[in-house]
Length: 301
Image (cartoon, rainbow, N blue to C red; front, side, top):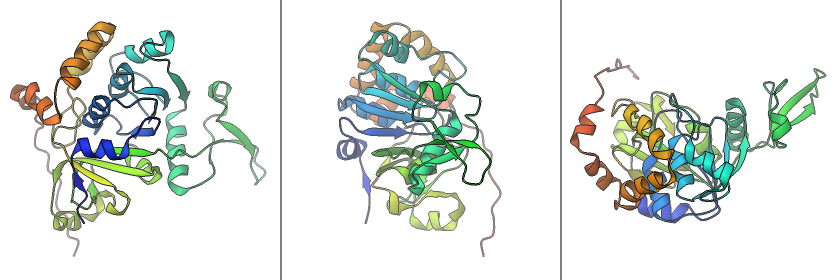
């Protein structure tokens, strides 16, 4: 049965006020299209989980969607701080924002524990760290094998994970390549999964290259076809990272009024991602067109 739907319908069905939402993607494949639809639909009091809550969550926080961030890095990559999140934390604008911080491995460990339905996940990297002092969810237990204390973190099971990828079939079998991040782990940990892809392909295409199938359709609730849905981040082989946008956002987001004006024009002011893409203009997509770098075929016979 086809799980193909629109972004508007997927968000309406699976993202609700107060939910814990994970929009993952490590540098690449960050689903801004889904974030913008969540903003348009006026979701509130969300707990936003992400290893690197960069611009995508800065925009959602600026729009008043979030009450808490669960994360392991905070910043505009290669540029500087996230000004909307900073306003929320320091001044409560537009709403107060709670922070729950981990290391990168700590967040991955929480997703793994969630995916495997474990009560916790042990890791060594918090020895000597100050994070346990400010995050009471990081605990220490005595190793049952007699080699001293080990840190543990609890499972993380988002209500919904939103994964952007290169391609999928209508059943949700999803293929992803390039920087994978924690896409697989968060998908298996989540209660619901929305997959957003650049391209819908036949099942035969998926079956012809099984090693690229990161997420099986059996855990996917909805499939959305949304070309350029990860802009300004990138999708390997489809378009490059829009570095100019990351620099512009640093200037825009420093001012609350300018941030609101950008949201009014580029999120509330467009009906959907297709209109956003059209508004960006052909020159943008030509500028971000990637070069050719084909991988070699393999014989699965």
